Length: 544
Image (tube, rainbow, N blue to C red; front, side, top):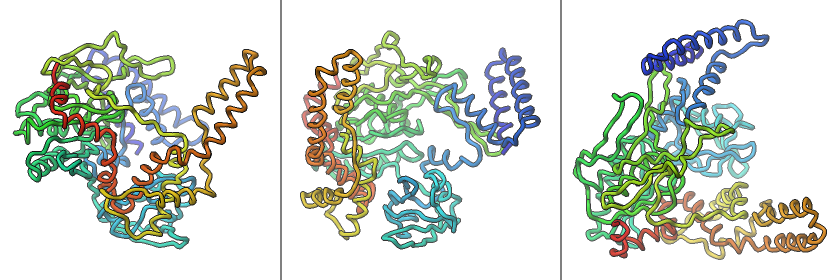
């Protein structure tokens, strides 16, 4: 580990020398200084110091001064790299979550080892290979469950007060980039894309082909990129290629090393270049998601619906290093067909707190789409049709973060062997009343924004010596909101019911069922259908 980390630091310097020979002396000088500091610490410091940890901290500190996407990975973290790039890892195929000091199975992936072994959401992990899991952090348990495909792991879980042991053979876990595709209102196709890992472009192409072939006369395709943080750039190009002709320039990368600059064009015949397309984005759609949504917007090939995307226009390369170490380095910025870069934060300039600054409005540049519409760089992808962000109520946030939604689902599954199919399942008044009864002895206290503002008003009024005159009224308001909160379970019944529905669908029908069941009431999906059904409106949005 020590040699791997030291060679990694030296490799960083060598890369710098090759890229900027004029700084060679400064780099050599500082490398010598660093080596002396490192040597003196380990030779003279009063206490023993772990050489690997010391070097890792030094590297991490150096990289933190750049951007959050430039990272160093020792050999022990290679599983994380493979998960990011390939969507695969060696493990049992299950999500876990921490509740206090305990770690629970939160979602076994359908058909994968944990699911086949009978592990369920709600099982508390009590041991791994005979070692107690009590007090272990989520990350520690996750590391223990992952491992080389073909090796076994014995997991002890507590369910209904009994401990069950399962010996599971780890496999190469390949996560599906497209967990669900299907139809909305019979004549609109819907494709959910979770990530841009290897092969995701082919998955989306297959989904679109099947949707169109199975329903001739399909009136539109909805591509859902909400929450999709991106991934491989070439997969983004392949997805754009589904809807635009061969030979179109989708993205260009430009960086310090000219030989590394790339122009990526569509390489295949498209599936369809005329069917209406709506792309859903939100503030968590980033990187490759922005290449797809931004390129289709620049080509005037799709209407973008939702809220402004994240704004990540930086490209990273994985650089192999000695002893199976690797670095992910930001090497360039990408530019989509109109010529704009959507990077929202300037990491070369930071404020007094060390935070990257936003690109100022004065430096944002206007660009033109193919039809002459004006679009701007510097702050992500602005949707053509903006939908209102729905903020979670205080009570919903409390029920979620205190795991009452999750734990009620565990309770519910014990009482019900089956539920209706995803497209027909709803939270009935009976189920909701059962949930309210379940909460009768549970703590879900929370403070509303209104309550916080009243307390702040009291504080300001006291400072300005007005409190005595209005204290009675403010106290009465506080009491009124306290009483009103007792009705919040019913005031926010719709929001809470959606959370319950999502969790229960996951328990019975996995991620696919959850997605299928929730799109029927999804407001962004409904807006997409509305826009594409109104052909004149759709066409108007795509023209100047």
